[in-house]
Length: 78
Image 1 (spheres, rainbow, N blue to C red):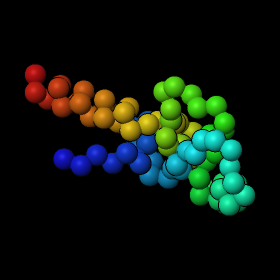
Image 2 (image 1 turned 90 degrees about the vertical axis):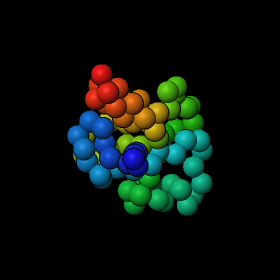
Image 3 (image 1 turned 30 degrees about the horizontal axis):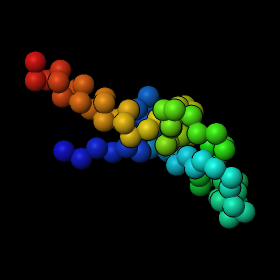
Image 4 (image 1 turned 120 degrees about the vertical axis):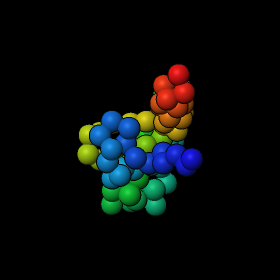
């Protein structure tokens, strides 16, 4: 089974951006201005969101997706 981390777990949208943390380079800032990435800032929160949904503005990471899939699998088994 393959897990698609890039689908928003809240609304199901496939329109999302990778979140990049740290001080951006000029090229990275330009990519952000074009809407190709989302700048997360210099302070990295814990847990660290990795993706941003352009539709509902939800932020998530791979661990959240794995936890959701594991929970769904446990529900089916029992």
